[in-house]
Image (cartoon, rainbow, N blue to C red; front, side):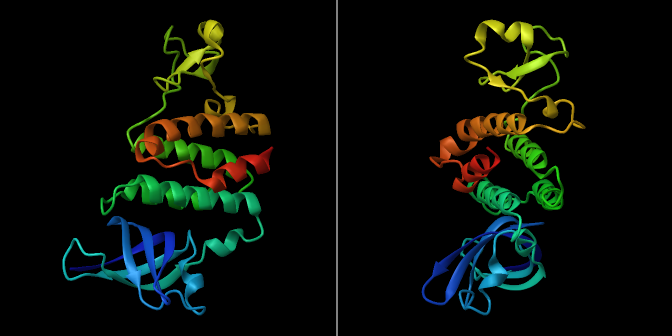
Length: 237
């Protein structure tokens, strides 16, 4: 069994003294792990930083085996964020979410393309809002899409201010009034996408997507939200 593909590094863990087990988000083969012999050496370790794009060949005797990787660098994205602390935390959070939520060896070309777009957006001034929109895309792909098109109670599509934690649907200001302590805030930039959100709105966006990631994705797997994501929110505040 063997194939060639390109993939983004999601994680790299030591295996013995000199090898690594790396997990990649590949374009055609989804999230896939493999052994890299000698990958832990000082010469090669930088190749396997999270976010880097590699050209890879994977080989195993049987499909269910771990398999081994041979890799070549295509693009060192990790180095692009060495001097931008918060976007680097966003990148780390994204790869942790992908590594922790995607099924193994299931092709997800849509998420591969979405992650490519995120890497571009993290280099812009609107990196924080782009990251929140990416988490919304991830939730939708995993089957937990959020709906901000109209009020879940009245059906109107104006003055939407909150989100139901049960359904993930938006709620208008009037309908939300009796239940403010039970609803999640809906920041304006998630509806009016050309606006420049303030820090308060960004925090509300992180709280919103974090709630649904924790409830519908990571909770079932007994995993917490990425620590780097929490540090990112603290950095914004």
